Length: 132
Image (tube, rainbow, N blue to C red; front, side, top):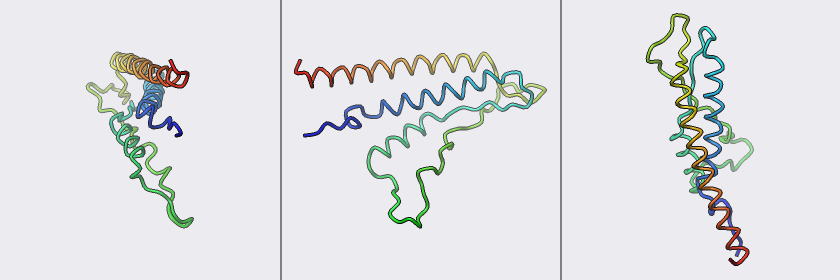
């Protein structure tokens, strides 16, 4: 009987990938905090996890003929949204540095928690394989 790592690790590997993407977007917002006209972006993490869970359930769309549209690349940035500012600046920039730093730190803590959980899963699998 073969071990399926996708089933063993569950959604947590996708959560890590989502946290990394969100960290990149939030870091980009912070880097452009003084850029006139820059619009702050964020990722809809819930939508990303929903899409990952649907893909894991096996009910996703598949391409069965070469003339069919390729759905694997459709909506890749559908989770990437513009943030509605609480207090927009005069130059059109919508980045609030303090809120972005808070979101970045929260995302980093969530990433660490997901990583530790995934690490525990891998450690458990290694112990099971070695017979401990």
